[in-house]
Amino acid sequence: MYQDNHLCSLLARHAVLTPDHIFAYRPGLPDVTYRALFDGAERTASALVAQGLQPGDRVAVQVDKSIEAIQLYIGTVLAGGIFLPLNTAYTASEIGYFLGDATPRIVVCAPDRQAEIAPLSPATCLTLAGDGSGTLTDALPAEPGFDPVPRGEDDLAAILYTSGTTGRSKGAMLSHANLASNSDVLRSYWRFTREDVLIHALPIFHTHGLFVATNVALFSGASTIFLPRFDPDAILEAMPRATAMMGVPTFYTRLLQDARLTPERAANMRLFISGSAPMLVDTHEKWLERTGHRVLERYGMTETNMSTSNPYDGERRMGTVGFPLPGVELRIMENGEEVPDGEIGVIEVRGPNVFQGYWQMPEKTAEELKEDGWFITGDLATRDADGYVTIVGRAKDLIISGGFNVYPKEIEEIIDDLPGVVESAVIGVPHPDFGEGVVAVVVGDTTAEAIATALSETLAKFKQPKTIFIVDELPRNTMGKVQKKALREAHAKLFG
Image 1 (cartoon, rainbow, N blue to C red):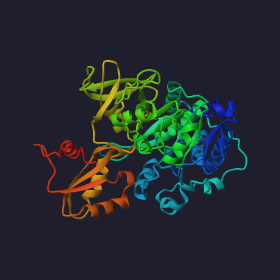
Image 2: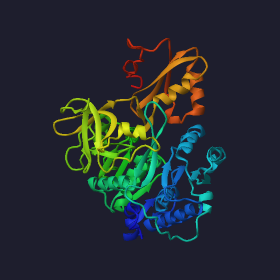
Image 3: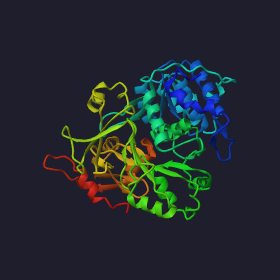
Image 4: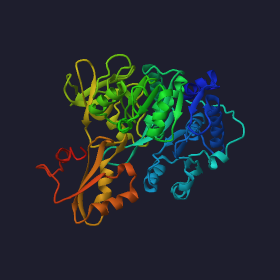
């Protein structure tokens, strides 16, 4: 049934082998078997095709987390479409760019946002609520049954938008082989089987929650405790019957604040994984002390999926992201040469996990993805004599706050356009909860309150500065360039 579709054949493996096995335990809602999951995905694929979806068309999605949203992802791939998930925090002005650039055939959004999103694109606009209702659901045929559209390994399965610190957002093109190869490697490397029960509290609009947590569970036939969002109470309640959890450092710092986190509560767990932002060594140490478990930290990005991981067996070295995954090559470069162990350089990776390029941006693709397959990540790192990779910073000014990418230039441009503002600099500084906190340093005749109010109307919450300083001038070098490093150093202890 699925043999002609590279990614779907692996996603659907356990719907065929163990159809009655539970894919999702949902607190307060019925459990979902693998067969039920794929019956819904097939019905969704039929509905998308009925709405005009052709192979290679994009389906842009901004909806709350639900099983129906997972079925929409799988159904899009079954129908030969390209899945385009969008952060639920994005405002209409932000969504407008993505829809204009990706030109989707179909847009699916929450019912309460249809009035503002539908006019942004000529695409068919359907709705899907967090409870599974909406016009997409209304359009589903009564019976499952759908022959997957054949797609090759290099055909696109998804586009995820990312961006640099300057310029417009970039759509990273991920093929069937990119997603399938990486998910299968992670399944094996992290020892996932159908006996596992994964706490799934991540959002599903980016790589971590969708292409790592969801795909790894599907590829291994594991069950999930499927939570709509991060909820410490729900996670702690689930932990005694779960075996694994994937999260961002914020998950761990907040759970550490709860006295119910004990070795006894974590006794059934075999694996805690952290990613999307660096975890502080202090958090690692406290988690080990409180639970008896050593967190496994890994490293990846939108363009590469996962590239490195601390070992499942062997030493998980705190503060590092471990070794390149099987099949992935990694080198640390400076001025075209690989640096010696212990020295800092830019990470480059090559392998089946590396994306196909940026959507409709051949020049940008050529800058970062070399003809021989090496991708320049822009992340600065060292590698020790034992081969462990440690991320030490970023060549550009990307901020990762709570696992989400924040691009200073986007925020600076909005601030600089506000009345009374002369100039601004947005930086990220260490934050015990979010990894990095966004801080804006502004020159001008204005107030922090006025700036915060303006930004709240145009930017997603995770991009909004946690602190805004009004200053007389920004530090500059002899060439007149703003010295963000000096600002980061000055405010390094702002959040403790």
